[in-house]
Amino acid sequence: MRALNLVADRELVVVDVPPPPPPAAGEVQISVKAVGLNHIDVWGFRGMAFAKRKLPLSIGAEASGEVAAVGEGVTHVKPGQKVVMYGALTCGHCKACQEGRDNFCENVGGLYGFHIDGFSRELMNMPARLVIPVPDGISFRDAACAPIAFSTVQHMLFDNAKLQPGETILVHAGGSGIGTVAIMMAKKIGCTVITTVGDDSKIEGVKALGADHVINYRKDRFEGETRKITKKKGVDVVFEHVGADTFNGSLLVMKRGGRLVTCGSTSGPTTTINLMQLFQQQYRIFGSFGATMKNIAESLDKMADGMLPVIDTEVPINDVETALKRMETRQVFGKIIVHF
Ligand SMILES: [Zn+2]
Image (tube, rainbow, N blue to C red):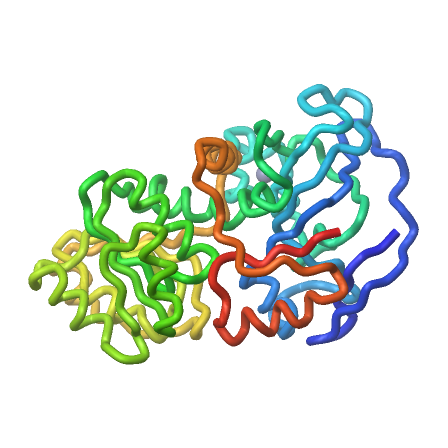
């Protein structure tokens, strides 16, 4: 069977590997159908000195597939069923896992596709409890965006920032995979959405998703534009994932008591912040990583209800390198899906 392996920094190859054995008790065997690419794949592709991992490594942290076989004792899914998979090998025993908050697992075995072999394999075995059934009517392609793109945003906006109807939110990089989802989810509950893009060609696209105001950050400073749009009041919530380039500006555009939620640092991991501003303005800053099991089910429900992911491109597995380079240069609008 085929697998897409990272064999060295910036070197991906499609290889022929032996299929897995039949699933053990408590495991399922998945026939992977579609993999969603994320920025973590770009980090992995470039190579990260601090990540504990061994190459070769099958990439892919977010995917959908079909149950090929189930091991003893598995009852919540059956062969032929469409499913998505949780993106980390969590323990299932700690308090967090027992509560379905797997992103707080105390004994996590690694992120699929980053620390341990991921989903870019035709067949794979994994713990059945990490497999979530997909409601009828959602394609493999769209479902592949539920475990990370949709669920990370669901967790950020609603569990962490507690975004409320009628609030104003600034969504950075509205054309990115998670940016497109954040616009749709915020708009759906009746928020005013301000977003940034790095290219005028993305303006119509983000407006079509519901953005009320669009700022081209390469032409105008988003800080000044956001203050103008909010008549100097500032926004209630900032959806951050850009990092060093924008973080201080993001703090600056919030109203007193504003909430900043972040899940990434694409432009760099380090910044300094003004602590006086932090406490005087009573800002709340949330670091957010991954999602709960419930967030994935909520995401799939939103898809079943008609909120579908924006797809930038669909590629076969032998063309993933081109797709990752496209992500690196920020040309993407929405998600890139790899098909098996
Ligand atoms: Zn755990």
